[in-house]
Length: 258
Image (cartoon, rainbow, N blue to C red; front, side):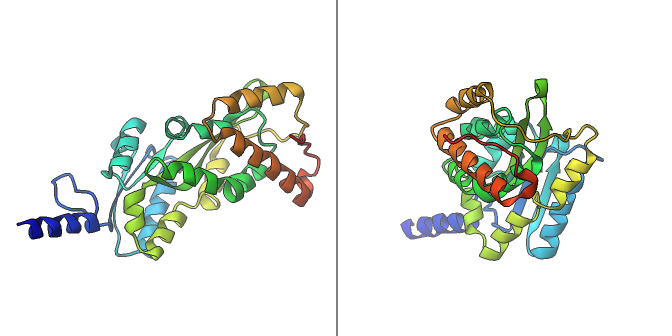
């Protein structure tokens, strides 16, 4: 009897979290939940995601829950951490509840342009934030380009995230892991589509040096952005200098030495 119990345990571990009816779920049965109202750019992005998965990994059975079917962000967090969902899109506020260090990205005037933000998010910040999400049992797959806002002429950047259940993701083949990391494509089509659909956009303006007041406001945000927040802020400061040095368009950006 103990031998059969051991076999059952091993089978469950190999197959993944149970499906709603209690049967073991194959790692290739994937449920994805994301906010995306019908007819929006977000819906188009997620339909493209599903189509990419179908083409690149035809053995994957993917169920896409969008809009009202996706559930509230809190339900998505619980679902993806518990394994009922394999992948979920989380808005900025819900993601920051899990990883407070994401609040660093909302510091005023942190980024001087969308190009600079893209460079830093994609090439500098993915690894440190992936480590923080891993501590929550999740894999950070990609950013969702939410919006730039400009309250009182102070740039604020907000980004949602696409996360996967870590245990499920690690049971995938290397090929399938790569598929799910590339399928949404925020660094390409999805990001461009979201920005093209905005009616307000970001007013073009020359990058300005950080004033003492801006630095103080940034440090106030960073001070409450989790234990790793100050280190991430320092990474951003150094990355801004690297971006300015390598990009003629950003050459006028002035970043103080900390």
